[in-house]
Image: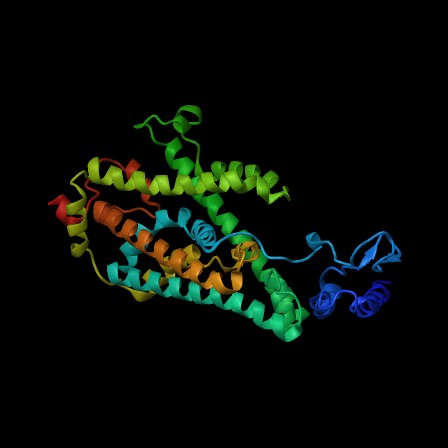
Length: 362
């Protein structure tokens, strides 16, 4: 039935082109994508075709709400959203990564991952428009759709499985991070924080189960617009945590000032002691930070001019996050030295011992 309706639509477009020259040229070019993606029909009601001058209509223009028109985001807003995707809880694990990999080793790893992520995200967007021109279809709006057009249905199923695995992996990582953070707060008797007051000495596994039980109902929500506020709140919390960590280290513990912290960076080791141990155990943290490729399609789809502005947005976002995270990691490492924990926040609740680098201990 849909093939018949599309055939009728093509005939009607050709028949009415004399009344509206050039109006339907782009629609003729989009017939293939229309059939493949959403089978949009040039008709009124269920069965009556649209004919100019009849059915009480003035033209055969289709409802634009059914098209894949571009979004409204600018380059700046897209770069901000990309930065929000990259900058997350993984930032608090970077000081320990630099402890394992060294100053130059960690910087090299960060640079490599950042470049690969930027090149990949930019290539994805270029591929969307390339396949769109070759196949004469609308630019695909997801990894799976892009793969199906470029490599076929079988490979697209593999990509779907890998994307699903990546999403589950990210969710699992955040559940572990939340569990570790809440467990550390629950065990902190010194600060008498609200978590310890309400649920003292609850182990990490219990917090992870509670977190997973909280996340699951949220995963059933299909209107992602409701998460706009929580997303902004989460980014604010991460940036606040980074700022608080730096201020605490500069003014409280060890409290020797920013200049001493910066000078102590030169006394840290430059390269990892063991390539296998350092990059095998720590490189995944950096990759986790930057590899957000599967999250970028919604941002691409929401942009007003993604073809020309997305690459610049990616470069800006990656560059800013790269600088912020390296500075944060090195300063925190100069605070706590060899005592830096896998999550730098856990370093605060250690027993009162010398937690600082050699220059601080001296």
